[in-house]
Image 1 (cartoon, one colour):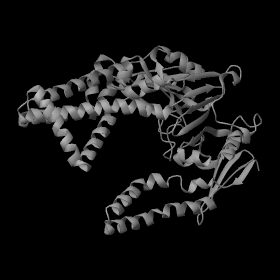
Image 2 (cartoon, rainbow, N blue to C red; image 1 turned 45 degrees about the horizontal axis):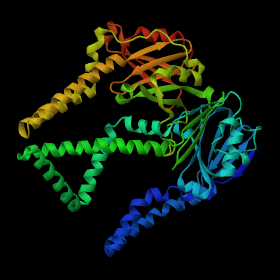
Image 3 (cartoon, one colour; image 1 turned 45 degrees about the vertical axis):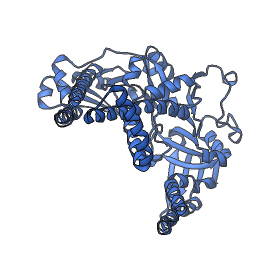
Length: 493
C-alpha cells in the first residue's frame, strides 16, 4: 500500500453547503426581520430539507476510502451499492489542486484527477484531502515521487533562481490580465448585466424610479427632447451603454481576481500552472498527454493583435464538478506575432506548418445557410416592424443588425481553413470570434467530411476532426473535400 487507506478531509461535508443555501439563508433572515412568522416557518421547513445535504455527505464521508495500491489509484465508495473506481497512475493526464477560501480556512485541498484512458465525466476522481495528504498523493501520482518528500511538498510559488536548469517561466502582468478581461467576448456579459439591472430595478423599484427619473429628466433637458417615443429610445441606449461599460469594468476586475499571479513553469516533461487569489488553482500536466493548443481571438483582441491560448487536454476545462468546469487557460494573453513560437515551445510537434486549404469563391454562398443568419434576418424584420409601430430609429437598428450579420458571414468565409502534416492539423473557424485549433496528429481519433449531394459534386464539405479530449472536435467549414483525404494520409487510427 503506497498511500492510505484514508478518508477525505472533514471539510468535505460542508464544502458546498453555503453556496447551495446562501439565498435561502438570506430569505429566512429577511422574513424573520420582517416579523413574517408564516413565511419564516415555511422557509425553515425548506431549510430543514436542505440539511439533508450535509447528512448525506456525512454518510459519503464514512463510506469513501482512498488508497494507492501498486500502480493503481483506488477510490471505494457506496453504502448499499458499493462502487470501486480504479485509475492507472500511468494514464493520469492532469492533477488539479483547488483551494477556495473555505478550503484555505480548513487547510484542505479539493483534488481533481483525470485519466487519459477514458474521457467520460465518470472517469474524473474528485476528492477533498488535507494539505499534507493531497501533496503526498500528488507526489506519488507524478514525477515528484522519489524526488521530493510528498508531505513536505508545496504548491507555493518557486523562485526562478530555485528552478532546475532549463525550466521556462511564463507570467502575465496585472495590466495584461485586466486587458484580457476587458477585451474578451462581451455579448453574454452585457445581457447578464442588463438582466441583473432589471431584476434590481424590480426589487428596489421606488429607489430606482426616483434616480432614473432624475437621470432621464436631466438628459431630456440637455437634448431638448419632448417626444415620448424619443425618450424611450434614449432609455434603451442608456441601458445598453451602462451594460457595456459595466461589462468592461466587471470583466477586468473579474479576470484579475480569477487569474491573479498567473504563472506557467515548463519543466520539459511537465507543465505547472498556478493562478488565483480568492480560489487558488494549481494544475500539473504531462506534456506528452496534451492533445493540442487552441488560439481564440474575439474581434477586439484580434484588432489589438492578441488572443487567448487554451490547452486541449483531458481534465482541464471540463468535468462533472463546478471546480473542473472552466476555461482551459494556457495563457490569457498572447501576441499574434508570438503565437507560433509559444505553441512550438510548449509542444514541439506543433511547430511544423503546411499549405492552407481555404473555401473557394464558389462555396461562398453556402455560408448564408446557417441558423445564426436566419436569426439575423428575423431580428431585422422585427426591428422594421418596431420602427413602423414605435419609432423610426428602429430602422437604423435593423440596418445595423443586417450589416453585422453580413460582416460575420464574410469573416466566417475568411477565417475557415484547414492544413495538415504528419505532426499536426490546424483548423480555423469562426466569425467575430476566430478560433484556431492546432492538434497533434497522433491524438486524432476520427476524420469526417459531410456534405449534401450538390456540395459533394462540387467537392465542398465540412471536415470534422475528432481528437482525444472531452467533446474534442473541430470543424473546417465549406472547404475542399480533398483536404480530408490529405489529412487521412497522416492519421494512423
